[in-house]
Length: 121
Length: 407
Image (cartoon, rainbow over the protein chains, first blue to last red):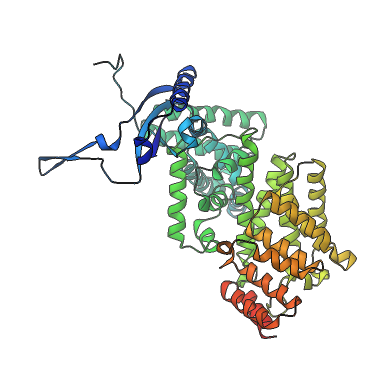
């Protein structure tokens, strides 16, 4: 089964500069996911300040500066993994270095489609 | 003929429901689907057995009928991936029928699924009662003080999540074991207390829930005989059960534990409890339920010695508060301190508990009243008894507390 691990951060964390130790821990985690052969996709997200929200109402495109909703916490990154069941997904979620500072939401994916080949433009 | 066939269906349902559900769900991962398929199998048994006779192996017959039904519905949904594990069930079911084996007992896996941390804690116990024992939602709802439709909804949602989120039917290993096993034990104990609380209600149908909890507890001990806490929990429930006949007087009036007539306690259930507690102690891994059972064991000893060793109870509560600092354990420790001859220490212990845990906690107010009375502070004790009475939902206990307030 494929699961997405969603990392949410309070806004302050986006604004604070990243500690070198955190960056190293994040890299090591990514390497471990690859080594386990369960990594499907993953990325960090830019600050919600750099988000733009789009919707189409009555056929007219509405574009707004900022994230979808002003909340205390924002999506900061995600990892998609392919593991046998929820227990294994939870184990990998708790290994994510971000889990020591914030909560990680684990959700199963419904269907998964991705172009194979390189992600380069 | 037809009557004996329907009685046979009933007997299988009562004795094997949980095992059949667990077996099917552990292979398909779909608890709701397994239950639906099984209830279809039971209804075709009710139709067929009176005419064809009761099969030699009723469980194997039901499994066969249920897996046919599961395969049909999986094919109908065109989910090929889901058909495969079901075909394996088919092969196994045939083997069971041919080789005179009983089918594997997967109830432990089912218990771990019901009490999985990804399942809402409020629904773990109801889920266990419905899937392991086959109790209907309406009966579970009345024990948990919610409407049958609300309970049905919660159960449906939980089962949907098990399937959709991929909660595995597996028995965890150490180090995960201790935490996960504790969730299972807590859910069983919650079933017991839900039934026990309402022992004095009309018809006492609710109390049957306490007996069902003991039944799950005994099955758990059989499945994991080397887990001391499972035995500890069973011992605790049995000790409480042994006194169920003495908890109320002739007119349904509440009788506190230390005033109960010990000749109304069940000697044989106490012996059984003691046996499990001894077996647990021999495994040398102390835990919350063993300590709670040990405290009840000392109370039970009053039937023999005529006295309660409060000093020993204080020691056990000290251990309990360290392992599981619940409000209940802290209040119990305070009362034990007071009873062992130091009411002032008891009062201080009560007042040391964080007020936001105790403000609406009836046992804290009752304990406070009791200890204040020991200290001769009668007016304050009356107020506390009255406050405690206002916080209980048990009519017999309320009447008792109000009576104490008036003294």
